[in-house]
Length: 340
Image: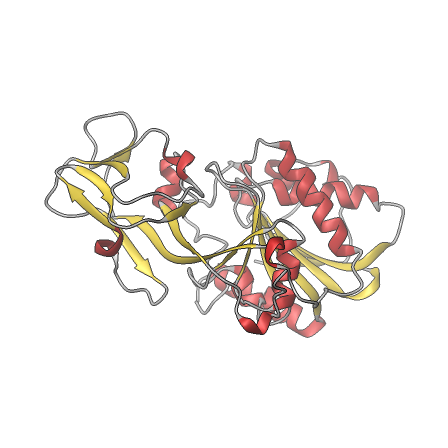
């Protein structure tokens, strides 16, 4: 499934994300030379409906079209077939950001090929670029609480999320090879996301090294993802009809990154016999009763939480999850945080 190239095909940079299938056969890894080595690895379009990474890369490569890149670049362009239809992934495919662990599907084997290739060639850092569907601020994610990882993250934004689940994400795999971050650049139709990603990726290409000096407290707002919330399979969900298994509050995506108090209502269930949410912690244990309860038919919070990734897109809720739940996290001592 993987094509590896050392050049950019004629006209590729003129194509929008949904047009890449006309010039590429499928997932493609580009190795482009630059003044410094090892290469910066950047992955884009792991989700076909999130074009921000591709648009930022187009800006950068057009800028350097007649100039040498300041650092070698290994660019992975992912799910172009889903991008053709503006979908996260096709129904016949796994999620391209859940295939970077062990598995025997063609997509898993393709991801393993990319990983092996980069392990052999070496890399300076890994950056995976995403949009999201709900109303979320721009932020970066890390999978290790290491100073270089956090430095790379805070270069993008002072809001940083640490997570270890779900397994199979690109940044978690590549965190074994080099400092790795995931960028969340807001919704696809907001041009600020492309501008922010372009500025950040350009800065990374121009770095000689990743700073390792202490991080001041005021330079980072760190959160820890403690649980993932999904809807039970084969349930009808939505926002307006009364004939639904779960009817969510209409403004649910406005609750992202808000510290919600106990008993906040997230929606209403048609049946009050059991919770229809499935919540798992970092050990993949079912913990729904720790976070939610039914008050009649109202679905309420049992404890204060801060959600992220809440969306009104029911297709995304079914394909991925309803949201992630977070807690504030103090930097551990080994990151050498400054106290001022």
